[in-house]
Amino acid sequence: MTDLATRVTPARAAPLRRAAPALLGYAAVRALGLVVLATWSAARGKDAHTLLTARWDALWYTRVAEWGYGYEVRLPNGDIHSDLAFFPLLPWLERLLHALLPLSYADAGLVVALLASLAAAWGIFAVADQVYGRRAGMCAVLLWAVLPVGIVQSMAYSESLFTALAAWSLYAVLTGRWVSAGVLAALAGLTRPVGLAVVAAVWVAGLAPFVGGRRTATAGGARDDGCAPDSVSAAHARRVRTAAGAHDATCAPWVTQGAAVWRRTLGLLTAPLGAAGYVLWVGHRTGKGPLGYLDVQAGWRNGFDGGYAFARFIADKFTSIPSAPAGLALIIAVALLIWLYAAGIRQGQPLTLLVYTGVVTALALCASSYFGSKPRLLLPAFPLLLPLARSLARLSTPRSVQVTAGVAVASALYGAFWLNGSGPP
Figure 1 (spheres, rainbow, N blue to C red):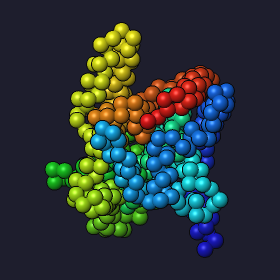
Figure 2 (figure 1 turned 90 degrees about the vertical axis):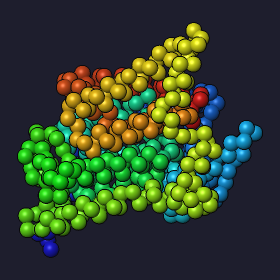
Figure 3 (figure 1 turned 90 degrees about the horizontal axis):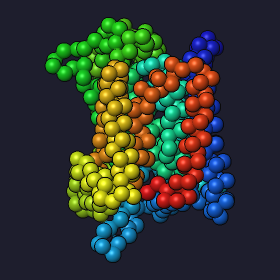
């Protein structure tokens, strides 16, 4: 018993020690953003706490946590905004913390977001470290922290919670933990509609080795016995196989191939349960069957039109000279997203990351309304940052610190300005 404890404890502590510098850097960037927000808000006679906990989606989540589902707003134009559009995991956690601690529902949502943002940062580090190494992992976390809309990571919104679940599910796929990947994907599916991206990533990675009736070799020539990780980075193949073997018993040579396939199958079957369960429940609640959730979203004028409405939105910017620069900026931003995704393909990102990023990006850009929300809807697409993280990692430490610090200040100022203005719809 003593020997087992001695051997297990270091193995569990090592990942956190390895990620600690990245997490400290992330916490410092987010703290800077909150300090700047508080200062800016006070100067404008506004309350930063209210801006973080009681605007837009945060109000809807808090209401669901306190009263349950069933509230809707009927607008003069006939639109119906129903709280059924908001997935339940964040309200459940808000209700749980409210019951356990002397916190309001709004403050409980803020605590969940802050803790989830740290978990997301750790998950992003774990994924990037697994594929490209520790230094790239640290840079990826810092880049995610300094995004212009990074302040959303500290709001009582569901983006941080979803990103945490998605990142750790992807990491579980990369290290061959298929049951964990499925459970985390199911929880992500209970958090946001884009949970579909996590499910797709788990399924594609899980089925890819068997497509065409044959097994594919993993990075570095590792045999895929149903539990080998989905990674294409030969430099990290040995560490990937070690991690998978250390934590997934199905990789042990004395375990049958059937057991390994069973664990993979269980993970794949579990992955869609969260999203499918909620969508079917909404259909039952509304009496409109499996497509009831689409009707709820239609009430918010949300839909998927392949990007037509967004393209029209951008084109409309060029109808007047004052708005033309904004239209040009949007075109550049979309081009940058495409370039980063293509760079990920060129650099050999694992299939599971490419599928996840592609679905998140497509759903964000091709939604038919709420165009101002697209930057925050892209927050979970963290693998897009990996090519930039690799470039930043090649700089000397003093230079990379200078670049990150400068961008962090700019991000904090923009976040304070943005949240005190239109804010994240």
